Image (cartoon, rainbow, N blue to C red; front, side, top):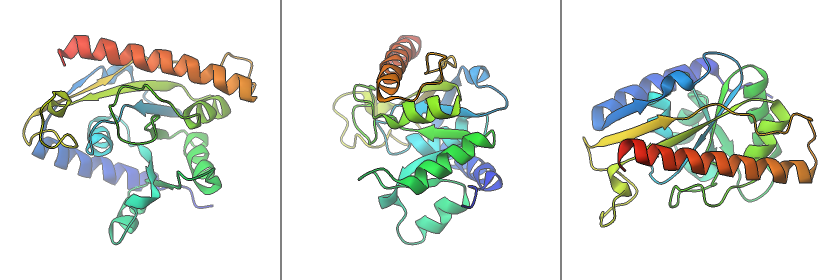
Length: 214
């Protein structure tokens, strides 16, 4: 297995900075809460198509995102792999993707996950078990992230994108451990971890909305 490129992720961060600050007006809050080193999982709500690139361009560290394999089409595939992003087949247990994600964490990198699995309301209402598995298996802390753009308002013609040059708020929360400290990876332990994660992520999103007025 080839370790996802850390240098590539750093290049991707540079591209994300250029694109996101060029096309929108990101306002980053709480970036100091992101640990400066060590394995880390960023759990991001997913309401807009730009959430991944926006986080790549605003997070203080390079991020390796788990991205659906359908995005890796044509020349975009080699580009995404070149900037250290991870292809995942959402139809089942993708062992290659799981191994790559754990390798990122084992080497002290940052793994980015949309715990809802797909773009939706962006409210963390439905979480998949993958986030709990990675957090409990690796012991890496989770930092919740809320990306709140103008397309959160009702009545937008294209909900997938905030209007160009509009403000997009990226709010980082406090790091927390998903496990109960026992190291257990049983189904019951993962289910309990998922409940803890959902409570923390939902609470962070509510706080972020109050803080930003979104």
